[in-house]
Image (cartoon, rainbow, N blue to C red; front, side):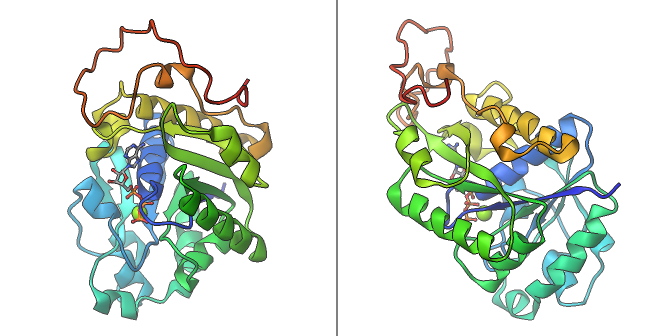
Length: 277
Ligand SMILES: Nc1ncnc2c1ncn2[C@@H]1O[C@H](COP(=O)(O)OP(=O)(O)OP(=O)(O)O)[C@@H](O)[C@H]1O
Ligand SMILES: [Mg+2]
């Protein structure tokens, strides 16, 4: 059976696309699915670096015709298999994004799930992964600029007949107006990932900080996505990734090192406005 190809995309840089690809991948591995994460952010490749993975051959070598897919498969922390990229401008210039289609086709034959991490913007190298995916998850942060850029990515995906499963809002706090964000998208809101400045420094955080709320959120997200990958569910059919507990305490988190999760007296006042029921 051919594996499922999920592209993780979003218009703006730094919103959490790579973090999302890594942690979905790590949860899928925990669940026993053979998963590979491919760095298709050819201009600003940093998947290998975020995981501290040692590598030799890269996606750039493969796309330049200088290496094979199997030679570029690299073991990374968290039981992950990745195809990392490299940072140099020379490598970027030589890599042909159009060859990615063949690379992904090859990977589909050996993995249950192929996760394609993409770059920001609307270039050819971001368009190719939108067109070749079985499904697309859009990632945004709550700010207007990121949301508007992600709507543009959604429009681009439609033009290449990409199948958008929905949008994930990362770095959410109790002050985020999630219903207002949901309204701006034509596609379903899959859910939210709470902001966590500590856990997300050490990826995959689902492995390194399994108790964090962000890890809980990525586990919920992956469990929902498995219904799409293996049972043919649509984005609309999925349960929302959300837990009120994540937003009970102030979770902006930068000036607190109190890790106690006991204090639940203060209840969230429902920043989700009943959206997630
Ligand atoms: N839930 C979160 N809470 C707090 N910080 C986060 C969260 N998710 C990701 N981050 C941090 O945000 C930064 C950007 O994340 P990441 O590299 O995953 O984004 P990206 O969309 O892939 O960026 P780029 O477009 O540059 O590739 C990183 O420092 C990451 O640790
Ligand atoms: Mg990235």
